[in-house]
Amino acid sequence: MKRRIFGLGAMATLAVAGCSTKSKFRTYSGPEVTSIVVNKGQRRMYLLNNQDILKAYDFDLGFAPTGHKQFEGDGKTPEGTYLIDRRNPRSQYHLSIGISYPNSRDIANAIRAGRSPGGEIFIHGQPNNQKVKRRDWTAGCIAVTNDEMEEIYAMVRDGTIITLRP
Image (cartoon, rainbow, N blue to C red):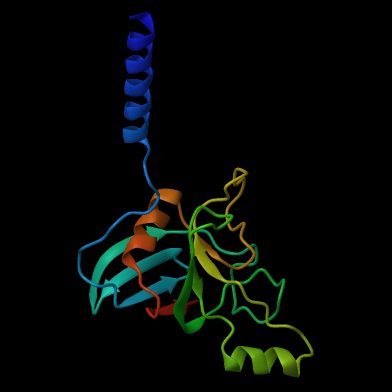
């Protein structure tokens, strides 16, 4: 009898624990996000459906936040028009969606200077294994909170246009 009570108690505990686990993968059934606008100077990002703002977010940038990214390691965030071209559910930064930097113009400019344009520019959440200690800490990415990143990850589809403004 005691084993049966223990077993039922253990199963109930596991069931409750399983119900309380929050998935980072949300669903979204609202209007389509047709574009993203990032205003670097204002540290404001907008998810748009045509001209209507669906959501707005504050964010952190690279450790050299002004100017257009030109070279690998410059700590800058690109400026211009790109696409969301990939997603990483196992990111080192909670979740992430990729920006199609560098484009052909970025590559050509870097090659003329004898440098690499860099790459791996994402919108992402916070680091999985450490605390952020200062503003503008990324290597050129756009960083939001993990809750915001879960929302963005659900709302934004690959192929969405992203415009990054100074």
